[in-house]
Length: 347
Image (tube, rainbow, N blue to C red):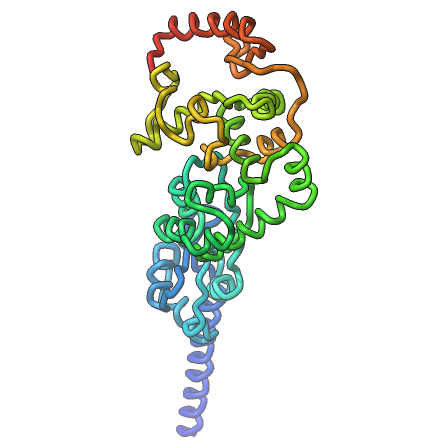
């Protein structure tokens, strides 16, 4: 009888212990284990990260890191770390968290436009993917790569067509650059290359003129007309006489690309630089900024007209007044000069 009681007690304790263990296991796997209040939290796992690095990255967002680690090891995640950007949702349990880290690396939307230099582009991209700005810049400037693709340091910016692209966060600098080359080839299809040839320009020259148009007007609907002015000058053998190229030449000469220049002075027109289109007839050796697709299309499909001059329209800010001859342009220009003097803009 006594032995029977002992067996019953052991059985009860065993069942109770098994139940407690089962509850612990269930709790470890299927109970919510997030500690953030927002609906979603982004966690980054860098390339080369070990298991401890992942745990350290997760620690601020998980209630019980030990229970997570137990499940992660049981599911083999500790030995199969995948770099990337992961979205953790509020209320996830350990099982869901591990599954997300195993398969949930989602693409990042990378956006860039209107960068003036490769340095600016590298800084812009480094804030969106894992590669840092130094790695990106070194990759963008790689002389062997540029030479193999018929580019140089001054026109390398041509390669990057502004748009929105999808990349995985752990994309390397080389992978980013190579993808951009594919996008460049896709953009410059046979139709666009044929159109460039029809207007007497190479794709590189189209991009340079488009960069000038981009700087001249923010109004997309006006860009074909501005492009038409520059194409009229170019086709008639004139110098382009574009103020934005002088501003770029000043910045390149001084090395200060952060300076803001609102007014070009007569002395600036004498600056000896291949970017100074008041001094040299040739199209500058590279773009003075990264033109939008709309600016490139504006050059390829420029407006046919008889305008050779334009100046800012002080009666309709953002737009310009166009003129067919110098006398008409000088009248328009005097109106603008009076306005800019009233604003006290000296530089």
